[in-house]
Image 1 (tube, rainbow, N blue to C red):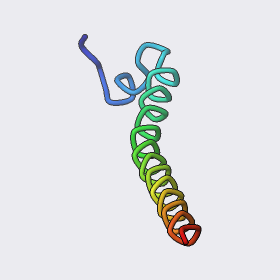
Image 2: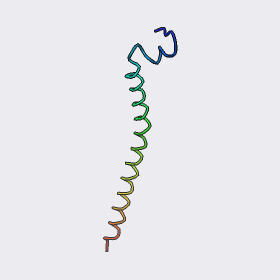
Image 3: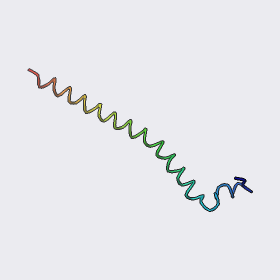
Length: 60
């Protein structure tokens, strides 16, 4: 497509809000998901360490 100006490019023929909003949401999710995955991993590892310590304390 050929755009007359940068404003026309960002307007995307009237669909700019949908297009750029979709890009924005996707970008935010691509940033947040690895952070949340890392947090879940650390929580699981912490839980497993606690279980291992508890098992060692229970042994006679």
